[in-house]
Each structure stands twice: as C-alpha cells, then as structure tokens.
Length: 420
Image (cartoon, rainbow, N blue to C red; front, side):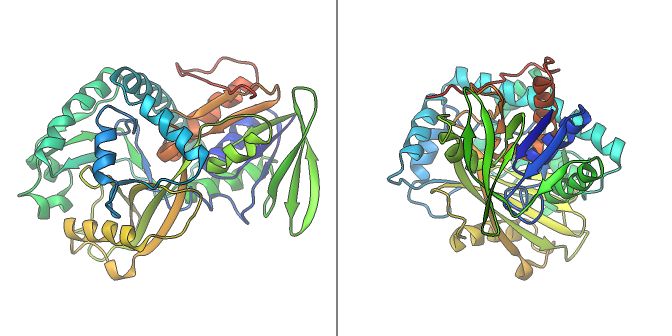
C-alpha cells in the first residue's frame, strides 16, 4: 500500500516515520528544499504537555478586546474581509465556555502525554540529537493576579495526570537562577519536571534522514496544486516542480500542510476550520552561560516561551491573526527582544538576534484534526496550532494505527470532516 504524506514539517515527517514502520510504502511531498523549513523551522522549542492550555477560555474575549489596538499585544486580531477568518473567530467564541475549555484541555493533555512518551521512545531507539533538554518547564508570573488565576489550571492539569507543581518565587529562582534579576517582581510559578525542550527543525531533519534510510521517498521543491478525484476518494495529486506539472497516484493520503491544509482541502469540499496564527521568535547566541537559563521557561505576562538550544536561546510567542502573510512586524519583534533582555540582561548577545515568523495552523478549540476524513482514502493530521512539536509523535503514531485499522492507544477525540 502506497501512502503519500503532504507536508514535510515535524507532523508530516513523524507521520512518514510511523507509517513506514507499519510496512507502508511512503512518499512525502513538500514545496521546500528540505524538511522542517516552515513552521517547524524556529518555533518555541517546548514539548509543553502540562503548561499548554486552550486559547479559547472564558477570560480570553475580554483580553482580546483590551489588546485590539496594541500593536505589541500577545494576541492580536486584525479584522479582514476574509470569510475564513470570521468563521474561525465565531467558532472560537463558541469554544470560550468553561465546559468546552475543560473538554478541550483534556483532549490536549491526553494527546500530549502520549506524544511525549512516543518522542522519548523514538529518541532512545534512534539516538536522535536535537539540542534537547529534559529539565522541565517553569511557568513564571510577574503579576499576582495572573499567578492567582493559574492555580485552577494547575489543579486541572494535576487531575489529568500532569505533575504541575505550584512554586513560590523563591523556589522558582532555585529552579532557574537566571530569573534572579526578577526576584523583586516574581509572584510565583508552576513547574513540571517531566516536560522537555529541543530544536524542532533539527529533530525533523534528523528524522527525515532516518526515513530516507528506511526507504521513504521525499519529493522536495514540489507544490501540491490540486487533486484528481474518483468516486468518494482521491486518485492522484497534481504537482508543480520547477515549472513542470505532474501527477502522483497513491492508495492513501495524509494531509499535513499546516495552515495551508484548509485552502487545499476546500478543493475537495472539506471545510477545515484552520486559520494561521502568525507567531514570532528570536534566536540569540548565549553571551554569559551563567546568566542564561537552562530550564525551559514560559513568561505568562507576555505569553512568551524560552528554550535553551545548546549555545543559542530561542524566545517565541505572540499570535497575530492577519491572514497568510509572513511579513515581519518590527514592533512585535522588538517587544519580544525588549522583554527577554529585561528579564536576563547579561544572558545573550541581544544585538545579534535573528528574527523569524511562522504561521501556526490553529483551530478554534486548539484541538487538532487527527483521523479519517469523509473521503475514504484521505486522512488528516493537521491543525496543531502552537503544539505541533508537542503533539507530533503522538498524533503520527495514532494516525498510523488508524490507517492500519487498529484503535489508537489513547483516549482522544479523533475527528474527520464531512464533505460540504
């Protein structure tokens, strides 16, 4: 059986790996010259199972309204004459209830716990090196109000199987001495020892090489432009590579094109409610190792994540709903740089910061599409939002089971999409 994976980001490459392990002939198609060069390229780096919560919750709408006219806001919604944007926004508001937020959180944690275990198994089996650290994630708060509001999510996480500890400001600095410059402003933190961090691009490219050694074929510099339909199925994809049009036939297909999954799926009559949330990151060389962090951090007030990647620091965050443009917003980049330089001024060569933006494929619920679609041989593994790196191995392993006709080994809302 020949399975074609559309997309060579971390989700697509992990899908290819677990499918070839099931014995399938696998081909991966991607428009970039190598794996992991889009949203996986410079993301925040966290395997954040126990610190990831749905964006849609009862407190979010008011925050978004307050941030509406702030160009440096952590979450910025720029209204456009775009039906997909407004459809996504209305669905997002519908998810902002306590009951739906709790259910979505449960889905995210169940998938995350499974995915982290699959990542650890894969790392041990293949000896993959990707600047990973297993020193946990510390979520720190410089606002007493935000710290107080974090106690309930931390309790919910513990009920779902995450050991997310509430810690004092003093304990937070003991866990990560690089926070010492904030000691008079810290309200406290929450810490999970089991969470991890690492370079998603390095992981994706290292795993892609192992895939090739196992017989997976990668067709890079190849763009998917359309489909050839059969009765209730996809017979072939139409591609464009270096000006040459071609078609590729297969028995089954996996759609893992991130934010670009939705417009392509519309050609098949599938309405995937995925909208790009543009995020920013900076990558900075370490200047003073003693002043730089080693525990991965989440800066709640500014909605930023910090990951140590060898002799580099990656700081990422913010979400801008403004369409498919990758254009850098200098104001938002400088806001990220200004914040981290204030938190640990001696840690990095801030003047050498490299800026990046990426389009996170976000669903209103923050729960990805993983499963079989209404088209008999089309499967979905997309819409992971900010958690593609966190959920990649688990969603790929589960999808491989689904394609093989076996029930996945976790409790998750595997969902397809009906044809409109």
